[in-house]
Each structure stands twice: as structure tokens, then as C-alpha cells.
Image (cartoon, rainbow, N blue to C red; front, side):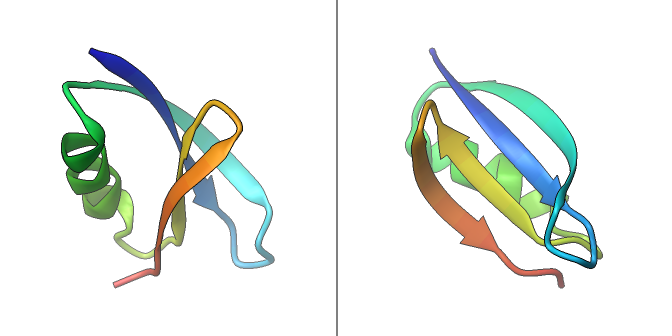
Length: 57
């Protein structure tokens, strides 16, 4: 299992909330982070590497 962070962004592009994710792999982490992009932009991070960015749906 690997640890990731989902950064939920506010309307000004600042981090509003950080959600810790423990997932089997990067694909699973992306799926979970994408589900959080409901009205908010979400950035998925693994340590200091940005894995993906999901725009609000």
C-alpha cells in the first residue's frame, strides 16, 4: 500500500483541505481523488510529486 495526499482547492486556488489516502497503487489513488472533485479542484500528491490534477465536475 502507498500513501498519497489529495489537496482539495478553494476557489482562489489555495489548499482548503488535505485528505490522506492509502491505496494499492497510483491508479486506485487517481480514482479516489477524482471522486473528490465534486465542486472542487483536487490535486493528487505522492510525497513531493504531483501525480494528477482533477478539475471540478
